[in-house]
Length: 191
Image (tube, rainbow, N blue to C red):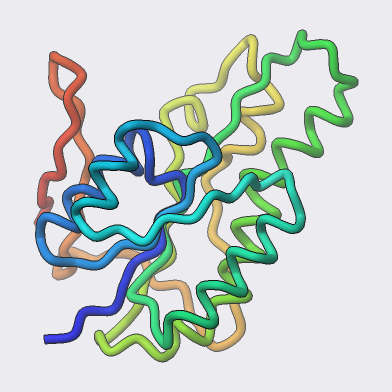
């Protein structure tokens, strides 16, 4: 059985790491990105992940990532965006630069990746392919110290030519990453 890989942006920590590890342990191939090397990436590589260093602020990194995936893979099962950057509004950068960075990381580059890799999603051997943008509670709750970051993390859907957004319904299976009392993450099935 040939399973198409899933791309996970920022697979080395938090939700992206736990999702990548769970997929790999279930025999589902993972392509992952990281900006900073963590020990967790060694574990993912040992499990079979194909990892690429990619700083979303560096144009050449993003172009190389897209090119490598297009050259290496004929299909994708999905794309999961867990990339995030948190800059406090009171940092030394002018507000317009903070906003530009947040929008690039949370909106611009994910949209570019989605659009560039759409042909691989359309070629998926499953009935459908998924594009998932992971947000967090700050996106719905807000933050006094991270107003611009919160705005950039807004939950939104992007339409791509040939790919119709489909909301989950009660017959579809969803997976949730749940944190327990000890801050351990695990993937739970939600019917």
